[in-house]
Image (cartoon, rainbow, N blue to C red):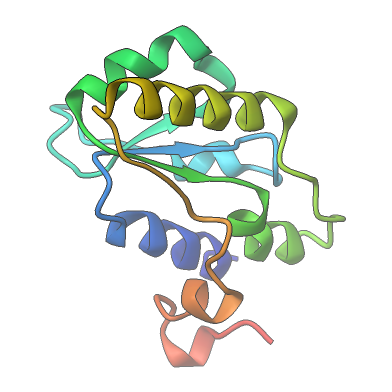
Length: 133
């Protein structure tokens, strides 16, 4: 049961971003991927997309880069539960668009979407005896 979460969590941990915004509406229990150290010393700091608003992005951008882990990045978790892949929520698309617009205006933030990561890349963080098939 932990293999899909471990794979996605590993991909988040390997991100070079300062903040990882997880589309917690994209897969069952996706909010479980958002765990931080009590002192926030972990990087990237993981945030729930559902509680962020577009006006929050300039503040995050001022503190570092942002990676969005949207529906395609969470596909291994959705697949594990036999759930139909939810599309990336409109809220997350709006956050991404707002962050990109802010970045273009102020050149103060790097925005990355992790949607392009393949299932193979996600499962690379899972020990071989737990690989998804």
